[in-house]
Length: 113
Length: 112
Image (cartoon, one colour):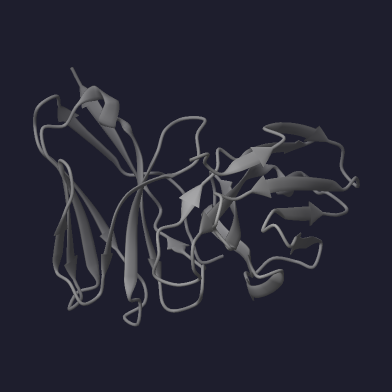
């Protein structure tokens, strides 16, 4: 069974630009969550999608948004990029919303210059 | 944010020894806990989980212990191997549907 796939693996963007990251969950998984990982803040929850609806959101500004499609694939978007948005963005998928294993993709490394 | 990761604690062990990695979790209402292993350049890899109605759970070479009284979680790795070298994270969730709160992580270094 294929794992969680995130594309692209690496991105370099300029301040002020916007970026879209993609996540394909494990087949059959309906819950997709996004996390930001930085050396200073560790792993922080961004948001969770289930059945095409955002169910939970972390403490990030409105520049961070996402969506989920009917096939459970998810995208996240960051607008008006700032230097501090440089991070590893991780997507995790799970069968259900609570108390089940969450499997992570390899992440997208975003560098903002 | 809810996860703090400044200077990672480091655990250095000799190959073949047992390793114990500790984690203090934040919310007494948390009911599900997961240990992840993250190697350089990769996403976190699921190791083992435990629900709050259990105190101990064993997997292959790994054991997780949960002490709800002091909100403490530990991961024991038996016969540690060089391939176990990585950063280990504990994560908790409290019925918030997919939202995992991660600990700061511990870097495990295995000396051959």
